Image (cartoon, rainbow, N blue to C red; front, side):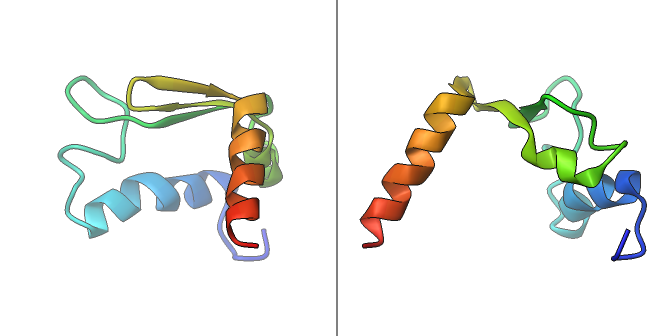
Length: 83
């Protein structure tokens, strides 16, 4: 808790609070019917340890599912573009 925020507050700041600040909270920031949602599925609970946000199992982006292997390949591909 180096930032002084609890794990819950850090997650809330990255989602709900940011959507409100950007004035897009009517369509993003929370999971509820009618809102756009890109979701990260984690293997570990970030409320127990915020570093668990790095334990990514997969990502839903729009209607597309990206598993861990695909995500790592995309990151490697992106690194090679920068060389």
